[in-house]
Length: 253
Image 1 (cartoon, helix red, strand yellow):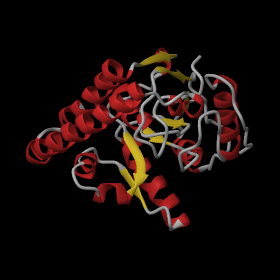
Image 2 (cartoon, one colour):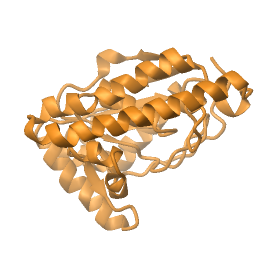
Image 3 (spheres, helix red, strand yellow):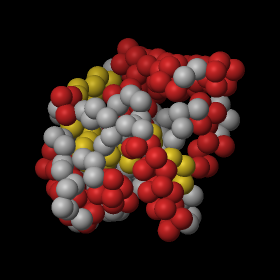
């Protein structure tokens, strides 16, 4: 297991390759988003989803070849086929991209401000995400429950990051109960996902560190006859136990 990014030396090679990734990644995103806006609205949802995520495919390939980041997925057989709520820990932007490829199609819960971003936001808006205003707690939860029920009713998995904000490598934040409540109300299973993306793609940094990102997927957690607090606890226990590497802090739900 590779040491966390904050303990890796920042060599000139890492700086140069990170800068090159930053330029190519964003340039490709700008160009591709223009085509998405022109072509995307005329495509059926699943084809539109694959077309928009061509940028993600490019970004993951670039990350591997240029920055030396490899990805190992464990538990792929547990990926949801149909309606389910996926609860994942949150360390960087990497998982918001990679999970789009791993679970396809999906509906992701995200801050509505992200949709206002030029280029990136235009592409994301075409994927029919669940948009929330995080400054309005009850209204945000209501949006998750209402929009999430609509997506689940159409057989589309919903991906939620219950920590809300990105955490440092080796750290888990407090898990909110919104995702578990959505699953319980709609009687669909929860699938937990844990990874160590912050070791290679740290939050709020343009640096990319070589190493291996390990992503683990839990067997489905049955929500029948369980309340949201119980499902959240079971999810966080699984994520804590299967975290790839050492956890610096555990926060009970």
